[in-house]
Length: 234
Image (cartoon, rainbow, N blue to C red; front, side):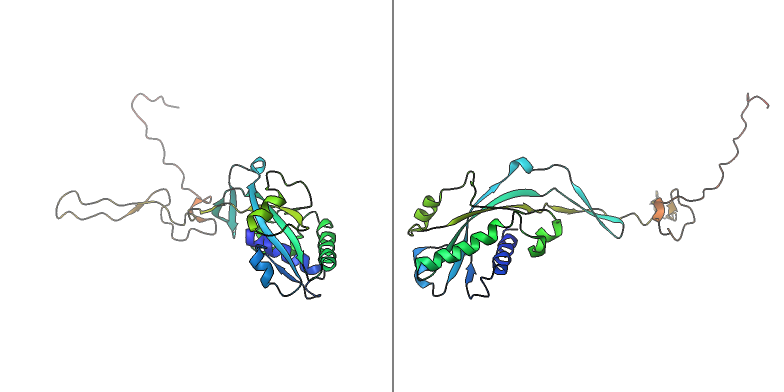
C-alpha cells in the first residue's frame, strides 16, 4: 500500500507541471550526502512517519464472489496515516520557494488522492484516500527532529499526511459442492466382496444441473404407511 500512495503522490505532482518543467520528484531521504549529489531541480517527498488510525478499525469479514460463487473471504481493511516531509531543492532559495509554492498549490487543491491516480490495491478497494497538507500531524515527530536525525540543515518544508487503507487478508473459501455424498462399505471378513457405493439422498443422479446437488429436485412420493395391529380402520 505504501508504494501505491507514493505513486499516487508522484502522479498528482506530475500533473501540476513539475515533470514538464524538468523537475525530478523523488522519495529519498534528504540527507547531507544526498543533497551534495543532487544536480537538477528536485522535489523530495520523504516518508518519515506511519501510524495506524485505530478508530477506523473494523470487524467481520467481506465475501468475494466469482461468477456467482463464493471464492474467498476478506478481513476489513485497516487504515494508516502516512506523513511525508516535502521539500524543494534548487540552486537558489528563490527557485526553491517557487517550486514549493507550486507544490503547495497542487496539494491544497485536493482533499483526497483522485481515484484516477490510484493503482494496485488502492484502486481495487475503491475507498477514499484522504490528503491533508500543512495540517497538524498528530503523534508525528516535529520537523526539527526529522532534520536532526537526517543530519542536515533545516529548511522550508511541507508536512503532508495521507490516510490510506491497507487491504485485509484474503482467505480462500471451500469450493462449491458438485457431487452428492457417497457411502461405501468395507469388507468385514477376508474374501468378502466390497459393496458398490450408495449415493445418499441423490439417487440415480448423473448431472447435478446448473444449481448443483443443492438445488430443488423432484422426489418420489413417500411409501404408504404400513398398517400395524391395533390401528383403527378409517
